[in-house]
Image (cartoon, rainbow, N blue to C red; front, side, top):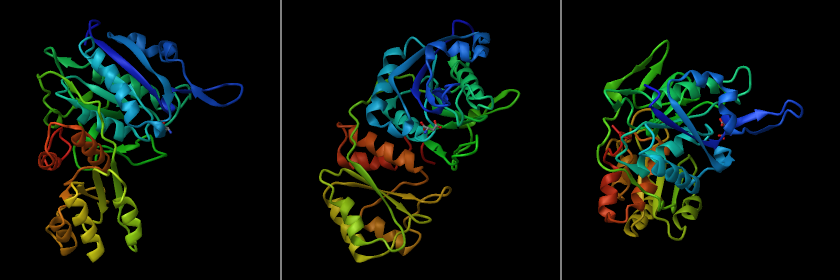
Length: 342
Ligand code: ASP
């Protein structure tokens, strides 16, 4: 890293960007023009930092495809000018946004590191400072002119995760994220130890940015006692293009005739059906039990070991690839595109 290394910080909102008004005690969005005043440690970096704040900082519960496009545009228009990007984002939906961007940005060859915090930046015990500082270090890490982490990742509480393998698991602990089916990309202790075997190799082709995101997707979480009407209410959404089925264990769901028939009907209509397990670890194996095999026969695709966040954003991404036929979209759902499945 040298002072010719440039990192762009994209501030989208979330707890990390809130400061407490000393008089009222209320949290309000922090003016990121004063980032260096709030975190003077950043001045010690031998790295040039610029900040781009989205027009309206958002709690990440309010972030969706429209804000993803805003972030994509900032990355696209600054891609050639910076060595890396740090996206400051609320932790609640960080795994969704980061997964979405990992798909919507094709041929990524630079670090795009998401981070946030559980406590606002001006709180004495904030986790935000360490998270920002190390995320910047990762975004600016180059060896022999090559980025060390040329992919979309999440840095949180001493761990660097592949974005599309990550899920938020705690509303309380500083260690808020896990990557249940994939190793850490790096661990930060006295040194940042990169697990190079786990990091994507990057891609020298031109960056392609997909912005016409298809949002006509839905999901149904199977539970004991689920009624036909509940499933049908979702299945009959006009214009539905993709449906995630959140199933038990290795991808199992009740063998109700109505469920198999509804799935067959949706499949024939061209709705892409994807099976994701409710379990944290392990994978969908639709051939293992009859309760999974009937889904396979109805045309449901295995989501393998994808997180829910990766599956739903990959579905949106593939649906937005207009040049692909329906059969190709289905095929790619089961193929590893960005390291999202094993
Ligand atoms: N509600 C906040 C958000 O996701 C929580 C956080 O930032 O950690 O925007």
